[in-house]
Amino acid sequence: MKRAASYALGCKVNQYESEAIAELFAEKGYEIVGIDEAADVYVINTCTVTNFGDKKSRQLIRKVKRQNENAVVAVVGCYAQTAPEEIMSVEGVNLVIGTKDRGQIVEMVEQYQPQNGVENYVTDIMKERVFEPLSIQKLANRTRAYLKIQDGCSQYCSYCIIPYARGPIRSREPKDVVDEVARLAENGFQEIVLAGIHVASYGKDRTDTNLLGILRKVHEVEGIRRIRFSSIEPNVVTEEFAKTMAELPKVCHHFHLSLQSGCDRTLKEMNRKYDTQKYREAATLLRKYLPDVALTTDIIVGFPGETEEDFKASYAFAEEICFAKIHVFPYSPKNGTPAAERKDQLPSNIKTDRSHQLLALSDKMSGEFLSKYVDKTVEVLYERSVEAGIYEGHTSNYMKVLTNSDVDLSNRLVFTKIVQVQGENAFGEAIL
Ligand code: SF4
Image (cartoon, rainbow, N blue to C red; front, side):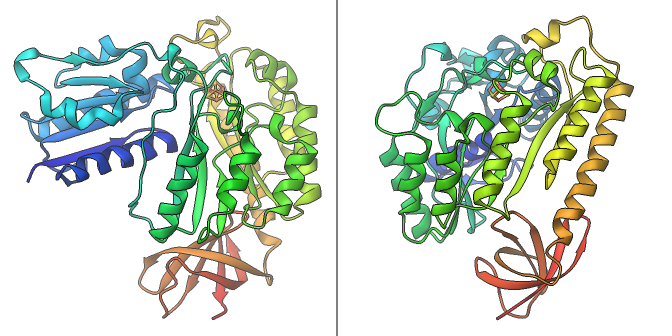
């Protein structure tokens, strides 16, 4: 039996696509193995969000070829899409595919003839208007499934290459979304994360639905107990949106609401389409309808031209919003973006210092958020056993909870009393 390995670098959308690609090979009779094992086919789903992502992708290509010099190495994803010639020049590559036509990847691999050298299937993504259907059914973790409902981005943030890697926004057919959710529910999944490159844009290219419309449809699927969005933007949070979140009981009380900077001048230079006032309103609306909501976010520090004053404004705004967690990213220039061309790049010691300051704030706010739950009872969906007799799960507002139990709690929703918090974890007693 032939063996295939499918591996994603980067975001959850890439991970979803790599799972889907693995299932395509499995359907054709391949044994699916890990990326560190000897295989006949390696599919590497690359990330190009930073220049470092490019480097990691190139390193992985070389590594898998060393594992089996006769293997067919197919390189897909954002880096392959934006720089196919660069990928073609990496030793060991056989096929370059990009961010579309992955549905035919098994045929492309099987038809590949070594004497033809490197084959390049990358075509212009900017003209793409149709969502490419790739689906998953059998993820290893049987509790939470990421479901890609959207591709592409038309926001053109000044630091980001993704609109060129993924093309314009394309929303998945509502029926396909619902069918896949129903299959996942049949396979035991209770929690669905609606994911995409820019989920907030779902439905903008369609006349028959929008983000709330698809959410309502997914909400109707029996067997699904929880629904999350991978990330949203403040512009989608209207009064109607926040009210709907409270009316739909399966919607989790956790929103990853992209901020990127808490300084209006920097937001403008980043070409983000909101300001801090809009963000404040979105946070206030979500808290009005969902008082226990957890808000998490991403913030970039050391964007070109970010002064000490700008950083202080960003820090103060993060403190005001009171996040449950901040993912901090020191700015990293990405070739091909306007921000990377700027002459006012900051030295790395300033970026590191600002990262540390914001991470310390995140830890402090996270601790305060968790400690509110000590002695309270919360409902936890347990995902897995992390070691013998210890189970890990999450609440609706994404608090990580660990508990001891002799009973198998995997994939069970269990009321749990929180007794202690430590770092990012809460420890509880399951009420069985
Ligand atoms: S919204 Fe901005 S950061 Fe996000 S993918 Fe689109 S361009 Fe990139």
